[in-house]
Length: 144
Image 1 (spheres, rainbow, N blue to C red):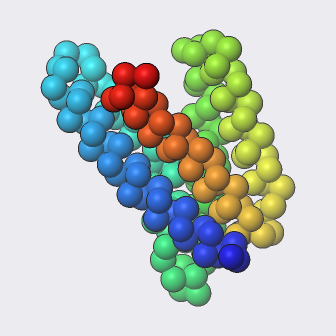
Image 2 (cartoon, rainbow, N blue to C red; image 1 turned 90 degrees about the vertical axis):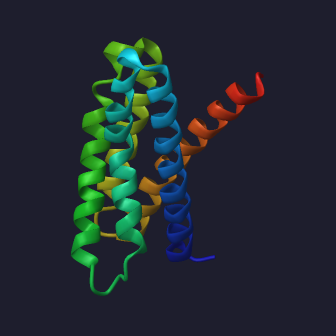
């Protein structure tokens, strides 16, 4: 399978998965009430770059090449900037996540000329992030 198809499949997975995660999180937060409602915008801020890049990857390439490049650049910058806010809140785990995100951002900048590899790196990070959320929700649901 070539990298173009792989990127499209990962993008569809992320669009569907992140949309469902936001809907389920919103419903649960509204049921809980109180200050838990503030988790909704925080989750949207964390998920926004992955959704943005995924939507632009599905668009036709020849017409939207510059839009896709801008979306990937914005996503990589957002990934690095957002990860810098994690260490004060999550201590050791936040530092590890921040280092991973910074490394992926630098790797994405290294492949600046090859857009498909940049998208593959960004989609891989998004897929790992989404799969982790899904597994965490499943283990909580199953009581494991």
